[in-house]
Length: 291
Length: 320
Ligand code: SF4
Ligand code: SF4
Ligand code: FES
Image (cartoon, rainbow over all chains, first blue to last red; front, side):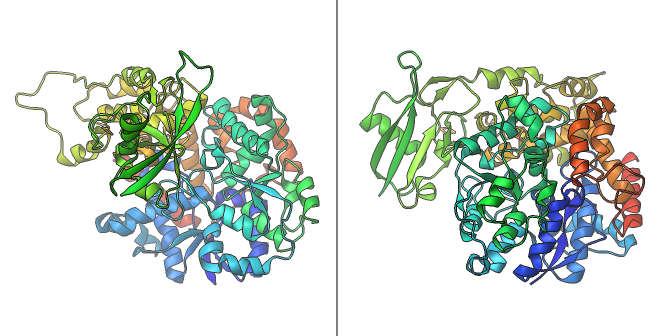
């Protein structure tokens, strides 16, 4: 299948290993990535606080780029999918608002008509590729790996915008983990916030959130965590040394990006999947799957 | 007729050291029964010692919020058949972030204290108009959303930041604050927003959307918080990390179309932040995770000129 690919700022910035891993697994899964090189940042819910119409117009531009290609728009970031779907809902449902936004967009040669399917690689795996197909592609099953899925916020909530998985009791990550041969670890914090958005404003609370979820996953016997969101990854991995300090516990929890986990099961090497870029070494996990 | 299998949190701090759970098989409930109906049946037919609050049974009074399977919900708005179509166990616990008085009854002080803190009233300035104060209809429609709050506490129960920081004003009070500050009759917008910009205020929300998801009345507290942020910036209340975070974010995207995450924290939180985080930044740079801060190291989108044009047009338009 072909998708309009929107990697987002973080997968091209502080989490380059996420874009790298996605580019590596896509051909093996039969997904052709047509990258939207002209598409701007989604606003990440931050820019929205200064100028919501500006954020919607940036997103309308991205949606129009996908519409011009007649392809579904695939993200690899929960925040990106959340922001794009929110704008998409407003623009697709409210004709007057769409006309207002298009009036600005048109001078740049784009126009959005509405209705583009905005999805995430997690949902592409489940709904487009199918878990049976995915299972059939596994070369190195993740047997013996206890994996704690960390959903975070935007990929689930609000259900009125996301509407793909049950926000109270999601199952998609668990189903992917199982299809790859791993064992999902259940814990309360899997749908809670990683704390990243207030890392600057209230670092202590931010780090306590991350520490609580990592600690809970550890107590439940997880070998690693896996997340569909690079912003979560930044608080869970990049900031983990600071998080450990704040919660007064050595956490040492490897955190995988979803495409990295898929890549391991497809038999790709840790180098190809960018594991050397992680702050918390995933050596133990890699050894367990013989990678 | 349906059945409900309940697992209910029980705790009486006056007699017990620790909470425990009791399970109840509630039989012969009507097909449309709610979790509250099942709990009432427990209290009436099985175990009269179960303590809980309820009144209207129609999602109006706001007294029956509990955590149902881990998330705050109105008991009277949650159907047993939707939650447990095959008789699955339903776990009912008291709201989070509040002290338990007994079983499912929580102390609501935290809720009311925070509400008082945001000064939930309108103060006009100047001479009153000859006739009534007038508010545009569209504004009233918009304010209807925070006005719909029935003060059930569900959002406060599940607020992520409040769990870690008791100073946080939390969603219900902040939504109410927008109901006041967003009202054109309110004359002390800047004064209110100045208080709301303090520690524990509008900039401490982590945008986790829990409050939006659990609110039974579609108040969308987080959306109201974002509107307060926008108003605070418009009022020029930008000398804090939260507002700077937003302003530099917008500026960075306007410049290249892509957020420069390396510079944003330094610009928002200052060089002190950079010094404090130097260790991890160097480590990440050496690992090739973060690109070194060299000129030209930040990418641009191919249609960057169009991004700049959109930004100029809409920011300019906003200033007018
Ligand atoms: S979005 Fe903000 S106010 Fe709402 S629950 Fe999350 S942290 Fe609390
Ligand atoms: S905002 Fe919604 S969840 Fe919060 S107290 Fe009001 S009605 Fe309840
Ligand atoms: S009993 Fe009144 S809201 Fe549920």
